[in-house]
Amino acid sequence: MKATYNIDPAHSCAQFTVRHMMITNVRGAFAAVKGTVIHDPDNPRESSIDAVIDAATINTLDAQRDAHLKSADFLDVERYPTITFKSKKVETAGTDELRITGDLTIHGVTKEVVLKGERPSPETKDPFGNIRMGVSASTKIKRSDFGLTWNAALETGGFLVGDDLKIELDVSLIKA
Image (cartoon, rainbow, N blue to C red; front, side, top):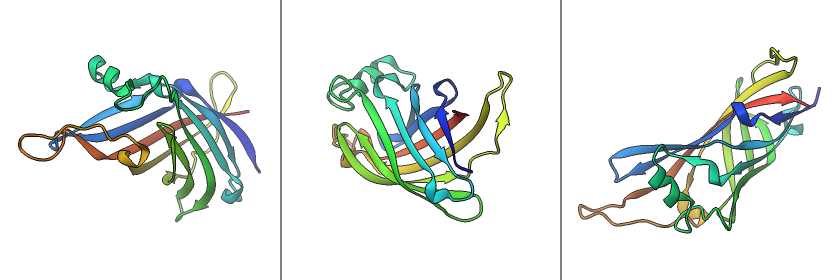
């Protein structure tokens, strides 16, 4: 039976990982994820996701780096305050996985991406009487595809910031 759920911003997170100086990974997250999920467990093709992330909530545990990531060199949060995802197709991919195809918009650029997701957890009632379920998904993108091209060459070769960006989503949903 199809049902509508709201993303719970207090218990949801969008995280990313990118290579720094070609030697290590830097991780970050966005604190404000909201949106709506329509879930049909019997027919996943009838499901949909519409999510919005407040780009200014980026946090890499370094205030100076976060300020740079919010600047026009990267996310340009003054001009592009949100990152959005709108699904176009949800399909099963094996017993416990979903393949979610949709439009991801970052820095004013929209590209189709595919999220590899787990099937949602079973519904459960929280201590406040809300019906909840959770879901996780991930994808990899090239940040340059979204106009995020700032970089610096390293003396030893290579670049300061990698182009590959791994995105991981953990979302808690409350039944509307």
